[in-house]
Length: 170
Image (cartoon, rainbow, N blue to C red):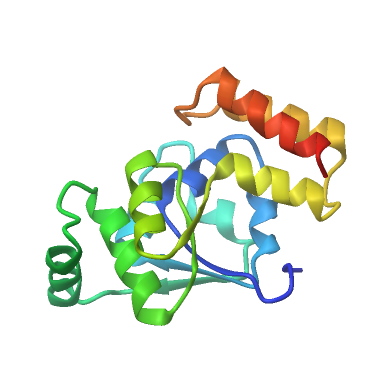
C-alpha cells in the first residue's frame, strides 16, 4: 500500500485535482493521510466530488482542530495571508509531527518549507506513483498533462514539462 511509513497532512488542492483526473487511488501511496475537517468540508463541497469518491481511500484520518490552537499557531508563525484550510494543515502537521504537506498552493509550499515541512503537490504525487511502479511512464506523462489540461490546478506548461523530465530521471 504505502511507501514504507509515509504519512502526510493534506490540503484540499491535491485531493480535488487528483479526483478531477481519476487519480485518487494514488493516495494509497501514503500509509496515513491526515485532513483537517475544514479542508474535508472544502473538498466535498466541490460539485465534481462526492463522499463516495473517497470510499476506496481507507487511509484518511480526519481531525477537528481547536480554533484557539489554530489562531495561536497562525499568530506565532505569521500565517494570516494563508487560506484557513492551509493554516489548519500546517497547524495539524506541527501538532502531530507529520513532515509532509500535500498542497498545490505556492504560498503554502513556501511557508511549509520555512516550518520544516516537505511540500508535495499533485504533480509530485503522480511522479511518486511512477517511481513506485504504480503506473507506466506513458500513463504518468498522460496524467501530468491531464492535470494541466483538464483539472482546475493552476500550473504552467513549463512546470508540467519539468515534472515529465523528473519521470525520465527515475
